[in-house]
Amino acid sequence: MAIIFSQTNREQIESNIIQKLNSINLMNSSTVNSPRAVGDAVQEYLEEHFIECVPKGLITDFNSSFARRSMADFAFTDSEGNYHVVDNKTHNLGT
Image (cartoon, rainbow, N blue to C red; front, side, top):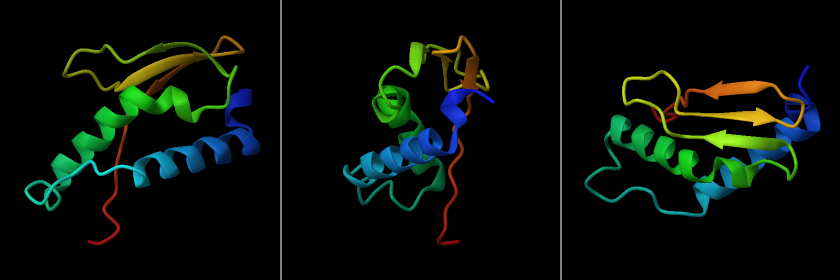
């Protein structure tokens, strides 16, 4: 298993992402009721800020430049040389 997925690192990344998302206002009154708009906003924000959520030294290369129809939202290489492709998914807990 890649070190980035160790329990300690995974929990730290998850906590950092949640804190980052909860610390900003991604939506406005016109878009907050649209699940697609929320999902797109979260995806865009994480493309720009994911690397800040990962403990230092675990990512050696990061890329968020993919074609619009690509399944990948961003990708990175970890410190062990493993290449990870990420496709963001969101879930509306209120439905």
